[in-house]
Amino acid sequence: MEFNSPSKGGVSVSEMTNDISGFVNEEPNSYYRLVIGTDSQIKRINGHSECEYVTAIVIHRRGKGAKYFWRREKAKPMVLRDRIYDETTRSLQTAHELVPDLRKAVSAVKYDLEIHIDVGPIGPTREMIREVVGMVNGNGYVAKTKPDSWAASSVADKHT
Image (cartoon, rainbow, N blue to C red):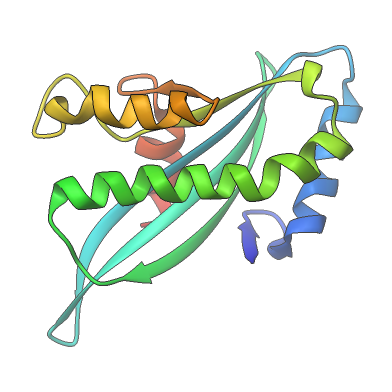
């Protein structure tokens, strides 16, 4: 699994973990949020439709900046409801894969972990909020939805 860094290009999971650890160690008395969010868009390329998913991992030093990493994956296009479930599942899978290594590198007491879901009280996704928030909370993570789900609706969206 490889991620992209705006400043370093392609990085491995261990390089990303080291970069996050270094960022936290620069100001060890600050408090951080580790945020994971996924966005998707259907695109037409040469007459074929495909769905692009971008998952963003953001380490946010409260009041003092952030770093982020992202990865893009492609899949068959699907209806909006299924895409929202897939976005949420991809964020959860990323958390399950990364959090154990991150907790070895950075003490869990230094940061809050949030999963940002690209659903909100206005628009076609409003009926899904309870379901996808339940998925995230059921996996032991804190869920944030629009307008507070900036990792999915802004950071990941920037790369879809």
